[in-house]
Length: 230
Image (cartoon, rainbow, N blue to C red; front, side, top):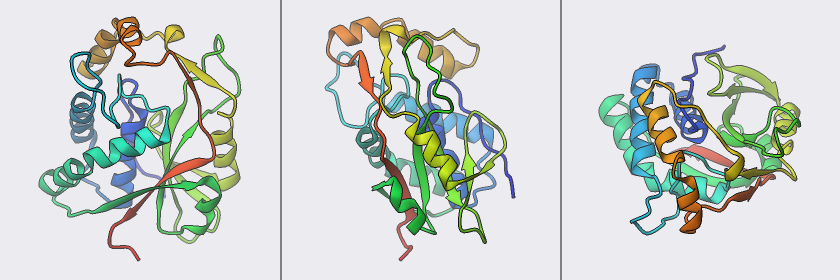
């Protein structure tokens, strides 16, 4: 059965992949767009890299995650906050366990939610490849079909594991460059916040807080399970 996915605001696909995934994982029907946007903005602003503060694992410049270890560090850094939010605002007690597993292990895990970086097409714009995070879970009564939660679309989709593998491995031998990345200012507050930060990207690079080039990683995915699942 298809369901509503909350579309991301700004360069925050990793945050929305996580939140949409938790919504699906725990059947949080009351985790609506308004609540998710508000909480996503809180997570973004609490975890941004700042010039005057020491750099910590799990932090992000404008919501991006190019390294799976940094993405997992972000989730673990905010795990208690996420669980508290879900309990207080959505009235559901949850306890998530986060691990990194090889893509090949997905077929062996029937009760897990996965988050992976993907690229929808091999076409590149000026040699700059922007990855995208999606979450997915094995569909009920299926051995090979996964419900995919992609924050670029409002409706979940169904994909086979080989299709997901292709999307993930499209990122092989590709890179992202900050100096080639541009974004227009938009009306929503989160987009404005991201646009304002981007005006200083060269200062962050100069200070060593951003690396201009990132090589995309493939072969491993994030796995989320309920802490109580055996």
